Image (cartoon, rainbow over all chains, first blue to last red; front, side, top):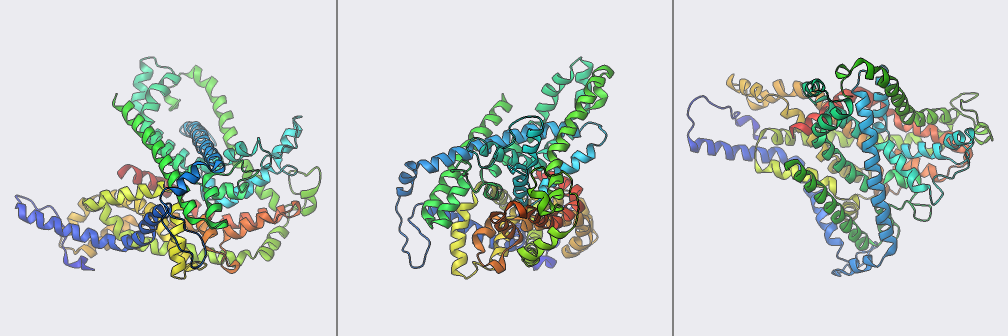
Length: 314
Length: 285
């Protein structure tokens, strides 16, 4: 590379001429491009290009198989989708899942982060445990919870029997319990990122603010509400936004837990689109579903982030 | 509630026991499933189907592990996973290092574009990327090949690795580089002698993070790999799930534990670095 020839743009003492500065800037630009190139090429070829292609595919009748001619069919996919009750049902399930997991995860993680921020004994145990799900493959997390929720062998039913409750619930196989059970697993799996992020935020809340509030006679709850939460706000917005996106797009966990069953009760949009594309071979139709998902998530993010930005200004 | 020092002694006496109870609740919620997975892996088939299964294995042994390795072809799958995860890590590290440096040090338009892309790439559902990617890879003969999978993982983990690394680099004072330049050192020399040693911990954290994502990944592998001989570990495990009966739960648990060990070990090593790196990446971005 040409790195050796270019001396570092150290700021020289005294007056610099405008032109010299410009030349250095354009050289800096060239260097930046050269340094970025090895990363840029694969990203453009295998990420930007497929993405653009994927969006376009959503307006075609592309199908799997050899020698299948692909034609643009305008908004046909979308008019078909509009009448596809199964898809909208899956969409509704996806939203319940994404919001349910994100909100519960946030509350559970905030509680844990507050506890970890205290000077409690044995908190290292909880701290280590809170990180473990991060290191586990989603497939393994799903297998583990299948054991936990197993109707005959699982300890959850066992525990319910022990306290006299009906202990034969088929958690993942029953229409009414499958989605809540899957949401609990989702919360478990996503605790680490949220907890660690919130904990770091808590540690950055200035203590003198707390002390000042305490001197003014503010109680614990008031201080949490008026000092801690406002200081945490940017971090809360960032992590819940990310969690929402991740959860809406998650796949492996539910695929292994229930594969969308029973009777489509946990059929997240990603699973639905996957089946459409790789089980039935309807690439164009599945891509159209992807496009709808992007638009919906983008609208939610826009509304949420704008709302947050507004209330911060006011 | 945030700091113990700002609490009156009386309210502290009431709050402390409650706090410990809450902490215990979290420890059980987070830890019990893990404990149960470990215990199951050491139980015999008879114990698993008995109507009143005991909580602790009565006769702990490694039979399940041996059988799982035998039957599910775990070693072969682990080999595939290792090839894919290590290759991805090496490639991602090599190409993201210069790019991260450029992102952190040059204030060009590129920086805004790259940051925008990194964020945008998180929003799009994988289904939109995987269909055309599948078609492209099919055209160049890289479906059902580990090389294709490495390629996809590289592109897919690049944004995050870049983000983390540029955070670490931005944390190194630029004055150090300027001082080096004053002393007449070439840029390469500055990078090697000054920046690289300071960056080493961040580099380790980033590459281990990339390794774990590759080792754990499921969706792309599910779509791109059909040949049983090329299956990665998560695929093999997921296939195992479909065929499980009550009797094989022990083997399933054993196989799951074995698959988790590498990432758990790596994770233990970088635990602290990882969290601090993520945060500096987030803050300095």
